[in-house]
Image (tube, rainbow, N blue to C red; front, side, top):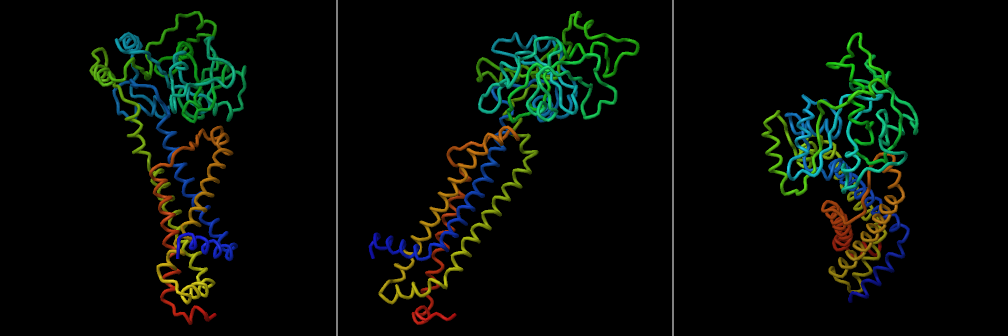
Length: 423
């Protein structure tokens, strides 16, 4: 039998069983959709996590663990063991090879969301994802002392709009326990576009504003009998004495290790400099249990899908016993029967995989903007990853193997059994 004849015979046989095979193709398509969808979500979730900060060469803070420094400086989780002096930040900005320095001051909150004191350089140099800059969805950056720029999630969850007045609180948590800065309210002047990073959950103010709300505080508590009003604080020379951490960008990335070594041996005070990418990988190893759970889920979906595919093929064996027996009676060898069934199985599996990939792409295009706005998760439609390639190869192999099982059964059954099958 020639290849063209086998292909024509496979098509006619498939057309006679089109309703059953349609269900089989739909099963394969659904399996492909689930497998690739889960794997795509897993890969994009990790990508979103590891791209919380990009374009920053070093993160500088007081000496502590690299993961802890990353947690409180980028993810705003936890607290610093110590601050770094403002004079050290100014000295760092003057070093040869340092292009820019963005100071970060943390420790306050607003209704459970962290407050970040920084400079306008933060909006110019902070990058996330694939070197994406921060964009304002509404309004402008802070210019007045009591201006605040909100992350997208803060504005959406609390229902804030431009011009609204908000009050900050000392410390973190939902309840301030009276440690608020009600005498110095802020005005919302800007709302950032969603980034899918901790920026979305942050209230941004200037370093001078951070100093202003703490000008009559000491050691985390208001000074008894001393009250400095908002306008009175505005007239004072507000200069930060220390900050929590700093983001550093270099003129040449090749100099990152020499600058890191110089910072780690800084003479004026004990400092620590970390590479964000390395620290993010370390942190993912700590919190990567969720990724392993998703990987396990993908494996179980693959196992169930392949088992279901084989079950569908074997379930249709009885209706093919007469057909296969007739082929053997007219002289078809075992090779021809197996070739016919293998061709059918591969074509059906390829069709199901193609439909599943197309459905996944359509869903990603349709739901992508919603996932980005609601959860900050960006779905990337690009070349399949190595894991996705293995999953597709596994599905194709399972379809091929499943198509050979009826041929093996037909070879073992007698012609009489096939031509007069028992019910």
